[in-house]
Length: 146
Figure (cartoon, rainbow, N blue to C red):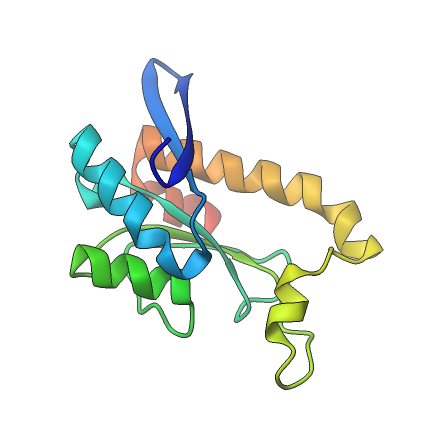
């Protein structure tokens, strides 16, 4: 599909459109803007899920809005939308890389210990995402952000 892989799921009587941009990360705003517009979804009803070097591996944190920081994908989404008023779920991947080796780090496979934890973390991220859609941002943050 246009700039993304797209699928739809149903959960507790609601339909959700999942969009995974196929552009380079730093052009993610193209897919976001296209699908928000074509599906007529307000930005506050969108949840952006992103890997985050600033969080330790395995830490999951949901926010209503925040600065993009050094995340080029979030920067492009903000530039494209003209604001940062959208919820996001940050998935910590840690920052265990040498100076100047960030790209190699984020493109490399998870180590064995991380790999063992990954399925449970992905399941928790999915639970948080579905909770966002069913009980809303504030209640989801209160329940999961500890």
